[in-house]
Image 1: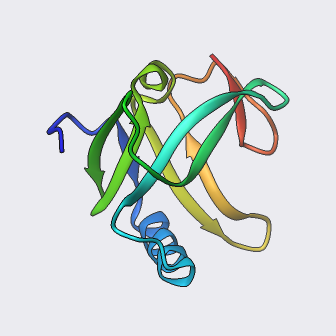
Image 2: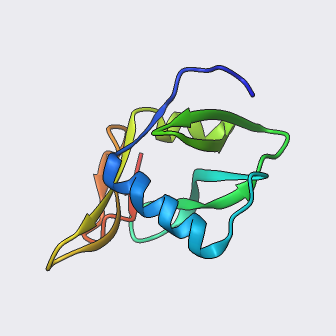
Length: 113
């Protein structure tokens, strides 16, 4: 595993929820949390968050005790991002606080850079 500076921060609440999902879905040690972006969404890019195996173009690091994998090409959009988990009356799900986003949509899952 490469020892690079962690470009992504996972909050304690998000770690708890991700660990719960990993246990429920029986995610193996071969998989890490993939954080990325893809074209689409109402603002131009949408976030990728899911469990996957490391691929050739991926960097790997640890955040909040979780193994994170990210395509090297996505770093320009994601360096400094904080992933949290909201669980209140108005919102339930993962939230993304991205300092690289010039705009984000109302749903908080897409952005423009």
